[in-house]
Length: 404
Image (cartoon, rainbow, N blue to C red; front, side):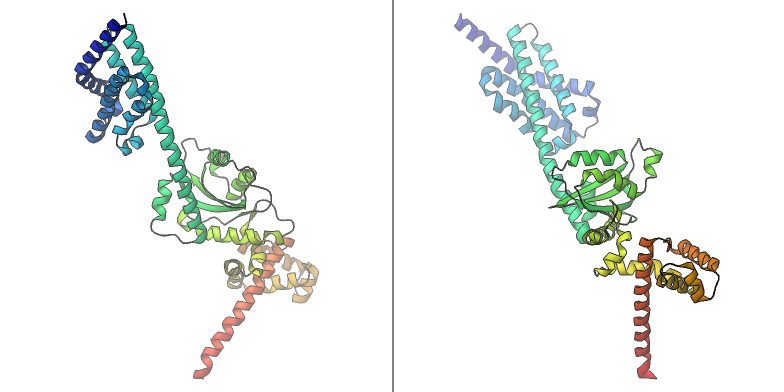
């Protein structure tokens, strides 16, 4: 009985080898007729897919002869495919390919015995698992590569050492951001859930680049275009976006850099955010998150040249260009402990005039001198602006003196 079974199997194997070429041809024809994505492929990729299908049929015949060869034969099917095929054919499409190949083979071997049909089903299951394993390994390798590339991009933004390759690296990461960008710097939580942070960002219609530098967590935030964008999310200011991302950070400081026009300018926002993060402890009641521009006095005292320039360019010079009365009134108001009456007496004007000029100050530069925190910012700007003006005046005088 055993000899008869062995003879039947040998006969079946010989028959399978004879029809293997016909099976491969019929499979390719079925792929063209039933799978639109296969018909739309370039000829070279269609040929590669055909090689995979043919390898599957050949490997089945070898497996049927020796079922113990399952582990290496099933994986060997995909070795025939060029590496780029994994990037152009999805796992779903690969499973469709397996289904078509199995269907054609089943039709052809119908009537050759139930044991052969069961062997086909068992082998197709092993091949499907092998396909999933191949794609899982590719996805894992891709994930590790993306993580390293993302870390490199974030580091380039933080150091300001961007080169001509930065845009292509960002594109390789699948960045969907457009328009304004801001950088958020905080602490890394003990149990950092990067996927949860990305999910939160997607709900806010923003894209993020994430960099973990020891205890410091950096997010480069950009608005993204999504098919389900809500009007409310599109209008969220970056500070509100930062508040909603705040649970993803560890305890302690959280500083948001100013928004910049595009990702290529993100190093400016990063520089301000990092400088603010370094001095935020000096503001006892700093909110979380806090904007880097709200830490301008502390940053300037720490020697940050960007903060000094910002204070002069955004506060002192606009006020001086608008009206010397506004500068004089602001100086007097701050020197007199923010007292309207004392300021009015010093300037020989009515308190209502002082009140009106202070409102004009707020209109011109956007900061309100009547608040204690903003008064500190404005007073620092006046000091830095005056120092710069005096230095400029001395340099001009020194330049004119030799020719006098």
